[in-house]
Length: 167
Image (cartoon, rainbow, N blue to C red):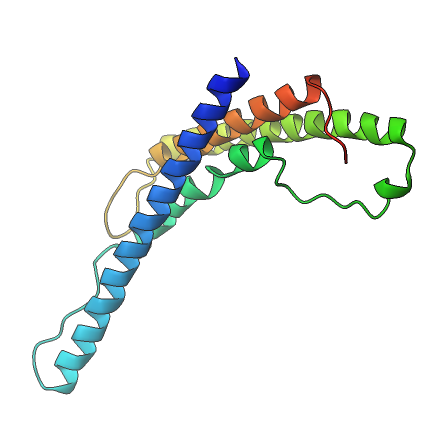
């Protein structure tokens, strides 16, 4: 995949993850507000008002989508945690080898996690698992995570074969 296209795709994917987090924030604010109004109504002797029904179901499913959507962008920007206490003392050729091998290991990790996520999605689909309150089918919420892991693997693999960055 051309690097520019991959960078654009990964950036848009991360922005979509940010939009999802914004929606979660708005829904959480509404839920907290509804709970406060309910408590105030109870205290004043009025009817009981509860928070948003299915709030926990919604947040659990949607956060599972958004959480992985930032991994490819972080990898592309090399924003992952790097422990340089030991590598700073190594000779430059050794650091270059590590800089090339590490993204390949990350790509393999993303593929490994993707495999197991597919297994989990298929099992969840076979079980016809649904959320307790909203009754939403759970397995489709695995798809954004699978896309995220695939993008993460592609970015890391591209970094593994490109000119290594100094570590």
